[in-house]
Image 1 (cartoon, rainbow, N blue to C red):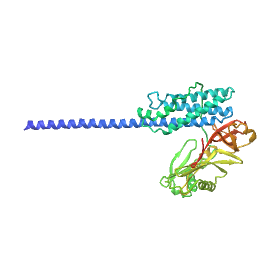
Image 2 (image 1 turned 180 degrees about the horizontal axis):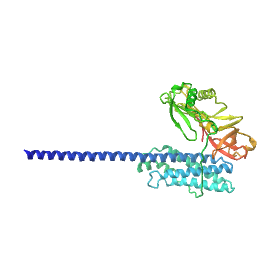
Image 3 (image 1 turned 90 degrees about the vertical axis):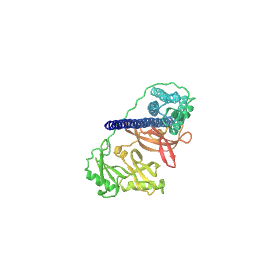
Length: 430
């Protein structure tokens, strides 16, 4: 009997040991499977980000090539060439990160490279005192045509990132570029970014948190006890931050000077009963009741039931675009659900705005390919975070293009070119 019991115990222990081993193996397999799935998600996220970056770069290339047709001075032409070189370099980096193992996108890669190379060659020619030839303008239009195709194809691609699936998704794009002509150019480019300090708060003393809470409450037309203090924001524009309605409403007050820099209400927006004109009146009334004066409406966009309207400061007859305030109006009931004044706080100051040349002389710098409809004075931001007093000319271009050209009111040089985009959902620029 004792021998039988011993055998039974050994069997039990043996079975237990097998069970433990099996469970351990299963646990290891489950862990490995989970790790593999996480790795796959991380890889696909990286691919999708690269594809989105590529799409953004191609869209920027298309816009800049569109503007280049209308650039009429060396300063603006060189600036656009630099933008093209930067965007093509970023596009190449994004394309190289995508899982394309064959040669299906070689022509697309060559196109992106040649946009950058062509831009470098133009920059060298312009810097040496040369002018863009008619043939080079034709090349710009050709590049723009291909960039439009590529931009549309990038928007349509929603791949699963396996090698086969991605190649299938990009087959149309590859065909579009099968007859892309060869161009050979070379040259360097550079770019720089500077940081900025807020102009409006310079020399203003810091206020206590309690004072900021009172300012926020007055702005919202609520009592102070309705606000909860949240974590403060540091950086170039330090703010006290508060919330209300269980976090749905958030508002920020600058520590220096006590200015409202932002307001957001994340409540659900119902079906729109109002239109743009109603929203414009609501936004203007809101600014007036909050003591924000001399603001001129410029552009607007409607998304997710909110009409977001841009206002720029008006000094005399000059529209100061750097001094920007944005107001978002909910189209279900007209409530103000967005307010952003960081642009105004960062840039607003007393300025001397005197033009050195006449409007008529400035208009001579506008491309003969454009027809001027109207004009006004405008202060615009420039690269390096500077400002320039300009004449803004609203023009019509080839096809249906509506173009804004900014001519420096001192030098007569082109400062910027914007293409207007108008639809039922707003008026924006690119």
